[in-house]
Image (cartoon, rainbow, N blue to C red):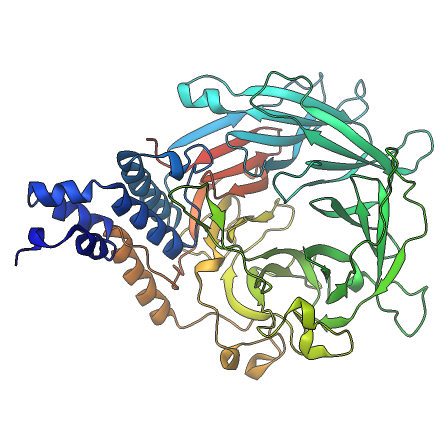
Length: 568
């Protein structure tokens, strides 16, 4: 029996096992097989399969919903996604478009302006939020949040500034990591009269409407000096007391105070090692990542809530919660980012995309640069992973039983190292790092010479990156933690076998070239997005995998946006 004589159901099962290139080759054999390869089911299955194997999102799926796409559109989307994934994972990704965003207003005479931050808005394509410092006496060092729409740049026009929010005496800010939340941005500033810290919660109206202004002030209340993050309706902040505060920004109410364990039972001892740098909020648990410690807190659900429309006073008495588990790093940390590992979205023929959600806690990826006694940190980036307890269930959790904890089952059961990445720095040269939702790490360092990636040159910078979630997680028996094994006196457990790493990279390159995305094995090659060999003008970086973009802030206030997704 010939292949084209098989029932359509069997042919669809066969095509579900083929790569995109193989499907195209089969299409060219005869008209009957060509008709089968043009069915919507074939390309929906191909797109779903390759998305799961890539560990990356399908680019621009916010704009083009798979449930409303025809077979031809799904085919084009599949080929486009594979081209993006192959480009994103390559040694030197090629930018299909470069957009330059300049500050909305020029600097005053003899004064300067500087970019202090750049942020992509979650699930809002073609918009970016920049933070610029206008250092002039007229505006009293005014900080300016500028919302930009760079869709016109696709057609050769200049990006458009949608709205501007000007703030004086800015202390800290945080963009909400949960899409669809009422509060999109939290800003902490110092009141010029009372000198108190004031936190303001802003919503961002629909960016596709003609509403003005787009920044909507929702609440304002006394706050705390250091903002750690904004997770849905909860703001995580801290101050000189090193206690972590959980604040309901929608109601302006302090919910909990997470107490750091005392040193020698003396509440006046506050060491920098216990200063919170990042936090992860998962269900009823908060994980505080400090300079040399990790604290796990169990936060019970809020028993009561205010029924009044007026925000509550944040200085009210809040519940004090002690850490239920502690882990100490062997070395102090200079910079850290922690993100729960997120699975790529799954497609459905009849509904919008959904994310793989389970009751089990996720693995947490941690990107770290350790500190040194010198004026600069270690010239290595480390990827650690905090593994969850596979036996954890919310109903079985008991504070007195360590085996029921979601993480940190013992004092030694902390993060384990996945791999280390050479990333040299140079004193007085700006550096930054960002970690995307799907595990793409992007950073600025001083490795401008491609022939010596582990050595900083005399001048220059590079924008480098790597998809952390594509690196295999070691089995429990092979996991290495700081201070374990024969390398106890080293800051880093070191790199893997170069021969094995090169072999893995070569195999992946072949599979990507044929349109197949390998599962469970990632490229060991660091991707270099851009290099400047003589100047040192980059100071901020951001990444958005869903739109395939990397943003780089300049010291003169300019923001460069690189798009790595091919056009339709």
